[in-house]
Image (tube, rainbow, N blue to C red; front, top):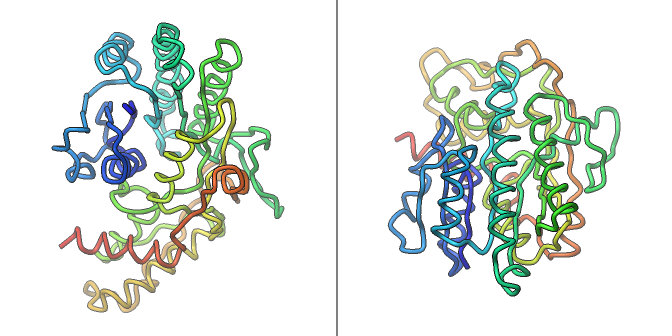
Length: 335
């Protein structure tokens, strides 16, 4: 099977490609614009594999996308390419509108034209998997509710609004044109090779350098945490076994407040790196509370019952084992 993966040099995309190349017999065509968050070193172990191909392409470039489809004739698309950092979307939304909305439209239209020309057997087998986020659902403040696949959309940030828009396009292309699409929403991912502006790598690397650990507001914002390699396995399973037209939520069954995450990292570093930077008595002393993010959602939590029940997926990694592996990985790569 030939799988076209957009955004494959990003954090989640690279984990997905490593999984497919190392654990399956499928081939991957990775198209990535290589923006600031791309990390080609995350694909070093597979870059010389004959089943792996890379093309530096912007998903908004219609001609380039058409050429890729024509050249490689994929059996499936797994669409991860996106601008994804909430803070950046607040500072400047234009790139999010362009990549997440216009880029998804360009990809859908190219995929639709390509799919329409396939023979009957290939047409039935083709899949377009759109990877989205739980942030499209908005906020669960003041409740014990969980996001399900039928939770109404209520995005808060320019980032989540752009992802919600792309989700609606994908659903419309299925409903209107019959394109065999599937959508997934995942909770917060963590793991190896994550871009350092995200919470876990930022706190780990700042602590090691004796820099402040900035925590938004009171730090009590709750997120559901999912180890990125568990997410990669779930995406592959959905692509292979998921039902066309359906949505699947992928979560780690692991709700943690941001401040709890930061304190866990500090505790691990006390154990793993007892020799602290000069002037630091305890890593926790570096925690600094800063002005909250505008429109900051208080709680996200995913109900992943459906993917467990219908596809037999569940996360393998506990938060305790996953966060330890992650912190140890950052320590080893920093050496």
